[in-house]
Amino acid sequence: MINFARVARIAVVTAAGLSLATEVARAEDSEKLSALEIFDSALARFEANREALEKWQYCQTLTTQQVDSSGKIVAQGRWQSIVRPGDSGPLEYTSKQVEGKISFFEAGTEESETGRVAKAPAPKKKEENQVESAVEAVRKYNLRNRYNWIRLADGMTAGETAYVLSFAPKAKQNTSTREERFFGLLAGQMWVSQRDFTVLKAEGSLLAPCSLFWIVARVTTFRFTYQLEPATGDNRLLRRSRATAKTVVSFPFFKVRQQHWQTVDKYEARRARGSSLGTR
Image (cartoon, rainbow, N blue to C red):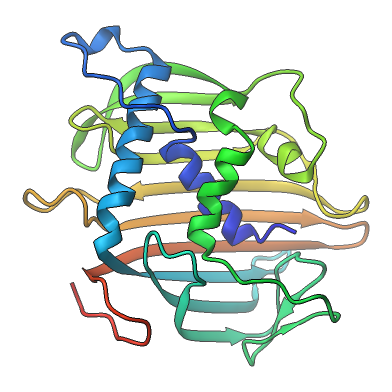
């Protein structure tokens, strides 16, 4: 089943690049670049940055709040982890704080105040690095070709001039799996740096409610945003970022409303597991 925090990560990776295409050489006249040429160049930059980041590690902080119909917080959690790009192992969590019970919609699982997940016994499977598996997911579902890409008027974000692209699902898609149904309803925009094709910003949302896990449950709201902070000096690789997501899952007699915030910071040279992060 899908963890919505992970879906947010997948959405961000989707905006960054979704195939193995090679980087398109810069055209002398950038006005001639098509939406897909810009997209493929952004993908190539994303892949190059992933390789360069394998010498580094960074801190990822996820905060989740579950609220009632009036907006009152009924449960919340905060998880900090060390991410090592290229490491296929699980994330190394450095802290977990949970108040109340937060639903994650993975076969009805909930995380309680103790930070443990309550669920029915199930066969144990290998835990994976969620960041790496998100990259695999966007390739598996061929999200690059699932959408129509349109180049909009150029814009500014993160202190840079950017190409602006919109994406919307193509008609008559294969939606035999819950993931395909979800991505087949997702649309949004992305901002790509005109300097080096780095994805500077992305946002998206569901076009219509989507049934994912059970016949009686539907995702009626999913919205995400991603923003890269301006580069400091000549360092364009080790940049802070933040992402948000809002989800509402409807059941016949109640709704589960959640808000998520994720930040990336504190880059440092790769260390062995169990080492503390610095303060960069």
